[in-house]
Amino acid sequence: MSEENNNKVKEADLENLKELGNIDLPKPTDRIQTIPIIGQIEGHNILSPQTKSTKYEHIIPQLVSIERDKDVEGVLIILNTIGGDVEAGLAIAEMINSLSKPTVSLVIGGGHSIGVPLATAADYSFISPTATMIVHPIRMNGLIVGVPQTFNYFEKMQDRIIDFIVRSSNISRDVLKNMMLQTTDLLNDMGTILIGKQAIEVGLIDAVGGISDAVNKLNELIESKKP
Image 1 (tube, rainbow, N blue to C red):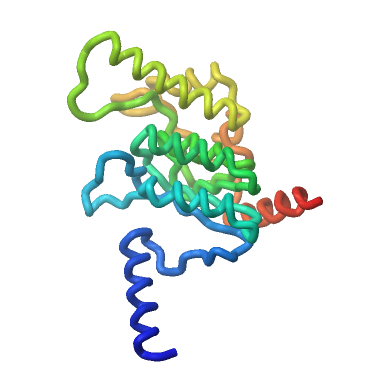
Image 2 (image 1 turned 180 degrees about the horizontal axis):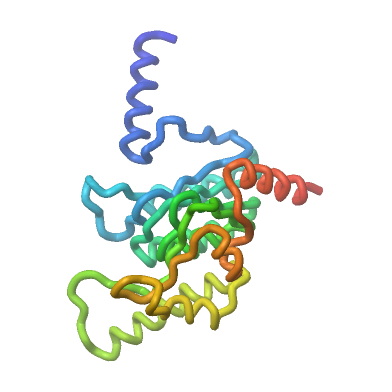
């Protein structure tokens, strides 16, 4: 490879590192595509440069490309997120859930807040033994207009999230709502912390496991879908 081509490769790697935090991106022809959802979900508002984030304008085109690519047979979603923009996170979750390719998610550090529906969006979900998930009601930062319409908006948004989680997991609506409104688990707040197998016990996640379990399950789902 010429020096000029080497420089072009290095420039492309630096751009990938800057934009996606990864210089070893999956090639379009890979049988299994990996989508990392790390840090905070960035939506309509740009986060500070010091904040590790996953930008939904990067993830959505990637999901569209995966759906259209005949060489891609399965998708592995790796999650370690504290949550973030609710509508952006829910949009990504809906897109993952609507893929025709088999999908498996793995929560490795945390799947908090809007990270919960992102974890349940896959066909099958894993959580590592020490990973945590926090289920809580919608929170809003900044100026909030104290009128009934604002409360109704929050309530409808909360219902959208609950509906999605119930539809894409084995947890019941009543159990999920009770966990969201729990006042003894989080300091000065409402919600519930689930660690590892606790997420399986309530029906939120399918199994405890690691990367090998997730890859093996995805291969199993791919093979089962073949004619």
